[in-house]
Length: 526
Image (cartoon, rainbow, N blue to C red; front, side):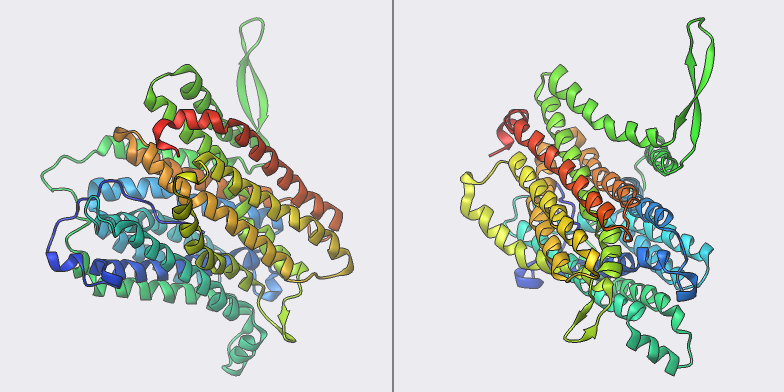
């Protein structure tokens, strides 16, 4: 589950009455942003819970009838775009329209996208995904910026404020699949539609519509209480020159990277010129997948360059950030298969019933958020209690990868058990529990570490890099899930075991690098 972006050195200004009077003595604006983000995440995770299932469902069952490979590709490209566009969206908010207006515009675009998904056609399906991704890119970094802007530099309430905000995220993410899954999949609701004289095959679109309603509620709350945050998130002064050239560069870089990653899905080849011995050009075919291999390998080169060849302190910190970036990409690549391979496992290979009554397979998407809500206070208490004795940041990342690897290792016997038919839901619940333990070790720790390690002149860029790690990890999750096979238990067990082994190897490598990474971090580590 995602976490809010920390803001560095906030210095809010404005009427004193806005600095208190909110939830538990926090600024009034926190409750506005809390509920706006709750409903925005409700819409996002409500739609995500249905996305893969809707794409692979036969057209006779109201779905799109995509094969699994195509569905995984579309899913990976969508979630990748949602996070990658945060870099561009954050730049536009900071330099052109302000965070407060970016949230409003982004929320409107997201709402339009969800309601576009309620229309029963392929063009509106793709248009809806594009709108939601664009709107998320504007809203997500900006709403976290606003939360940070509520607190003055050194305000003791700041960490608690972000914890409350994070709770809103997970409440929305917990409730959404329960609602949208019921509307889209439950046979009882389909019978209600029949009773209303409506086509039950369109139940998927009722689920997408519920996500749109959630986003609408979030925007209504936001607009109604906009006065509570009037002192933060302003657009830059109209007299200041706008950075048009950097905007063009950021936009071009973002869309070129998106294009190259989407092209890597192609199964054919492109021609690249090589110089032969006679110094003439010859054209050789290169598979498109090498685009992805090249992009994923670049962070390794960054780590080697800044960590080995450069000796200044800023370079060392950038190298440490590169190490955490690589670990985060791998973590999200496996973790985010909750929306693809684990969703398909829940739908096709799990006994989805309790007390003799069936329930929608999309409901499993709520389990992670439930565990986050339950475990976040435990981990917060643990780190505070351990104080200077707590593990280093690098070691916490190792623990995160270990728990993640164990989660997919647990799926190996579950996959083997499908030989006898559908398996118990407790397998998936165990997987999500282990993954949440890993998330608590890596995600909030990673966000905090990025803010500490970022050189002063590169703070915004480094936070964008963290979003990029999430983006590339989500893309890789879609690519990996293409090999999921519900028909062959042996192949399925290999699917899970191979990924568990890779994660385990990376965890061992990172464990060996812990002393070096701590050296790179200098005094910022424990």
